[in-house]
Image (tube, rainbow, N blue to C red):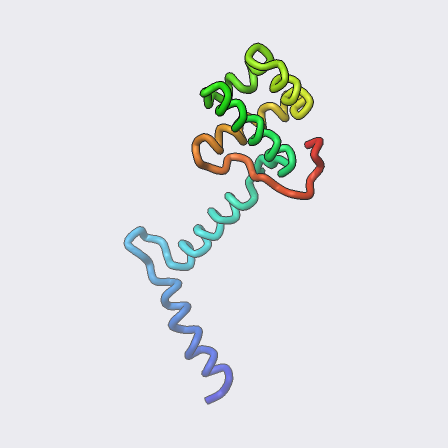
Amino acid sequence: MSELEEFKKVVSPIAYGLAYKSELGTTEYQQLYAEEDVVRYFNNKPQLTIPKSIADKLDDIFITFIRERHNSSVWHLLWRAEEIDCEIGEQLSALLPDENQVNVAIAHLAGKALGVDLVKVVEGIDDNY
């Protein structure tokens, strides 16, 4: 048997399987590429990131706030911090001087409170994100 015949023997069943239409009316080949497109779409979406050093400081401040104030509201921590505790307010102002940084911090803390990763914590990026 020639190499070409061996190749056809191996590839033909695969090609037939990929061309076979499923109950949905799509071929396995189309489904395979559709799944890859979905994965590629989600992998290429922009993702919020926060430096690990800042995330750790935020987590420490929030845990202290919860312990001392018996309040786990991200809103109370970030928007009313200075009214509640001047020291926490100063720490947050120094840590989050920019409105966008505050927004990322909200998403990070909300994600932690909900048990999901809304913001990816990364090492080695600029702490002045």
